[in-house]
Length: 158
Image (cartoon, rainbow, N blue to C red; front, top):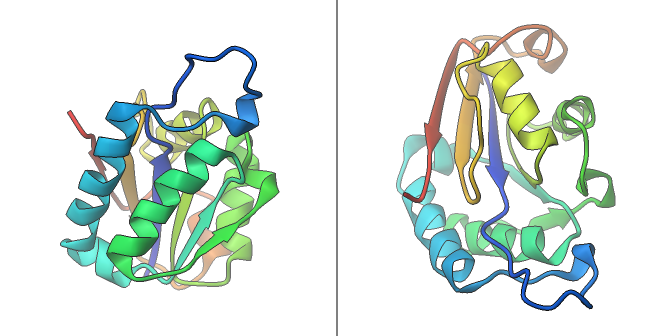
């Protein structure tokens, strides 16, 4: 079995236009939602199976991933290639992780486009701090990524 958890970073702060996109922090809602969603995932069977958490290097993604890492008791790995990555890049990063259960923390539009693809159009939008779970009944990532997931689900903070 292969499992991919996609998480869009929590709500970020757009208050200071002088801050570069990569360096935008989470806003109040994001700081509330990330730990809440992390605790929810950690309490699930899906969460306890996660072997690796890989995050974009953007501050808003790193902060979101840190909340999940704390709740899941896993170290967060940073990957600059996830910053504003396409759905194809995100999927390739999951394959390259060489783990059966991987979590990626990244950005739109790539994260929504990948969720849409893996859910066969069932997930049309990944709101901030959304957590999508995809499961394939195969032990081969290369086989899994050629088709929609056998099971999928979406949790949002609202």
